Image 1 (tube, helix red, strand yellow):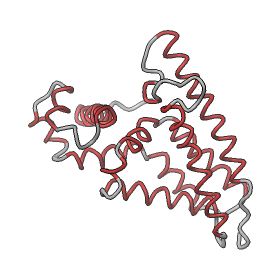
Image 2: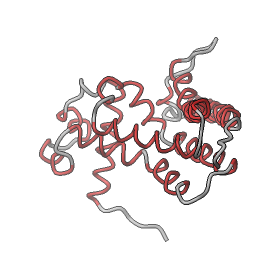
Image 3: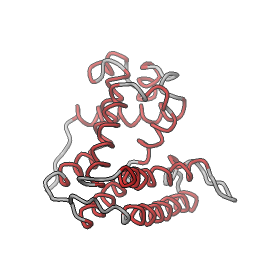
Length: 214
């Protein structure tokens, strides 16, 4: 039996989704709390009830969108390193990020603002923890690099989709599935195919990791 969200949690989720849209569309620095409130159709006072600052909203975005990474880290930390663990971590990361493409677009589009922000640093710590779990104990520099490249292959696929780095440029990634009809279906299919290809490459890179102390 499913649970019903409270009005407060539902409003908080709406704020996060709308803020993520605006931050991605026009940039974090260029977006005001007033614009977020206006798009939501609420007053700034109502917005302040849930988030006092834009930084608070970004923290909410990162915490919400990074849940699969946190779950993968918690799972991986309870198990000894093995090739099977390595590959499953990559799969779980890929699955989580494929469902949260707007987060990656948000970071791509707002890197200068996010680089040294508390939320950006927290996300970086999550990525470092994932990388360490993938490469395991006693890893060489080359294996640490392979673990990093494996995970970032997923991000790179989304980057290529967004910027259309092909002979026939694709539409922006964040719009995949947002347009109805055949167009939206085609974009969703392109996203699925690209992420499947990215996972294949990520696992190929990860397969080269064999820490001596595992």
